[in-house]
Image (spheres, rainbow, N blue to C red):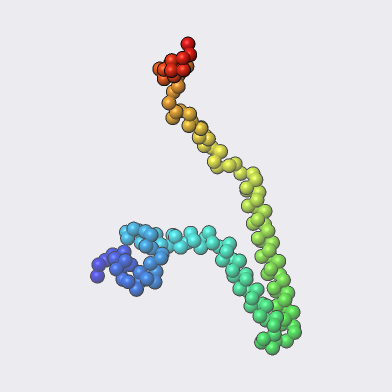
Length: 149
């Protein structure tokens, strides 16, 4: 009707309440930026998604260990072996990622090092005291009041 997807997204209260958290921070004309943002979120959170998926698989394996399903002992043994292998592989991958990121931290240059450190020039804002002499009019008046010569 309006030939504008942004109008539909921002005028429909049901869509706004359900999916508004994805696009209200953007201008109405930038509605298409939702997909790259979701892609970026999935790329950057893939590490956490993998950990949650592994926790889910572990919970299923541990549920099988409780013999709720009345499976034969051979199934429990195979599931135990699968649990051990998947956790070992996942821990190895996490360890390798940790080692690689640690190597990057130690051997990469500091990106802030290419900028010059800001000088401390607070003294440049102080009034110059070169025009003041040791004896000012008030010092002379005080000396006269005391009777000094």
